[in-house]
Length: 578
Image (cartoon, rainbow, N blue to C red; front, side, top):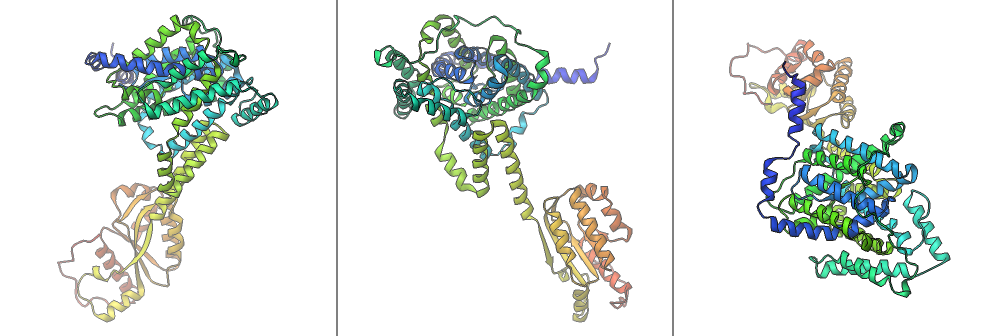
């Protein structure tokens, strides 16, 4: 029994996304460096995983489960040798309103659905389209994410109960009001102390994991009487829960599809961006975007089964991984294994970490996410880039990340189209240099009186075509218009329709329109709307400019405006000039 061709194609497509022998070979080249790098990343990732789990609303254990399960699966099946995956600040920004509206079970279902969608994107080979996201959009939403992450930490940093609401600005304001009514400075002191130590340490000793040092110091300090009342993480399960689908509710699929699309879009975008960053920090490393999506999709399918939140590639942890010498997937696997050991062996210690200390870690992380030099360069590049950056950042803060990216892409696309449309030109040109044969000054004057030639440069498409119609409609009272089209870069249906409309209107005024140099790849659009038929009907489409001029002379001769040639034209017509 033969296998259907479509099934063979699907099997090959999935096979191309699975781990390869070369991945295992790379893991055996320098295991010592990879193990050390993985240990370092785990130390950095521990407070971040705890903090992002708390910020998401599902608790510190959810952040740890995500770092272990998603981190391991993405390392094995992903498309980058150096990517480290887990809970991230960007994902937390999207999850907070989902938790507020649908509860913890809703978040787990959203993560599961998002995993399915990301796997589908991988099978559709959608990874290549990451290249079309403008840098100004990326910088804008990174700035917006940093602002949102910082604001999300305000309640824990001030030591007040988490106010209700899913809008970060509203929640922050309510937390500040609560603190002002009854100020207690222990929690703010811990949060600011941790953030200050991390930021200062990163400048002085970048290789030292100051986040763990700061959290350990804050945990010890919290035992002093002066810090009484500071809230800690609380009891954690000693190990990962058994995988379960108890949260799955088929009746909720319809209402959760939209947030799942948002989470999947973010998981794909941030993971591919992080993988690009890893490539840029190394020599010879290049990720496979479709495999990366496949790995992230599997990671997000598995994480909810263990109570974890949706995961993405983590830029900060990936950067630490690269800087500490990682060369294969073994480092990311080691990071997940070390965190798993901590989950099983050190849960009582972790449970005593103050929430204010984790807030300080995330405040410092938010500050370090903002690359002032990159923002300054983007703002100085063009006014369009600056506008897209500001709009994307503001939309991230006021709306959510997915809407922000959509707004950024739409505005960037509109500005790019405007810039391309401005490159289009309709210029009157002197056609006498292309006249075949010798002509008296009197004939030159007659030709110039009755013929006008234009060269169209650039795109003839929807964003620029109507300007051509307006310009050509104002052509003076001549008998022939020659359109030189060899410099047209692209033609769409709108451009073709506008050209046809222009030719029709000029013909009604008694003006013959001749064209030259229409490129083969533009004929389909012109033919689809009947523009070529209109020109061919009267024999007014020519391959070259000299042929079009000869056709214009013949038209004037037929109209009695130009004396006929005294003798038939001999061979040796000037070489075609488009």
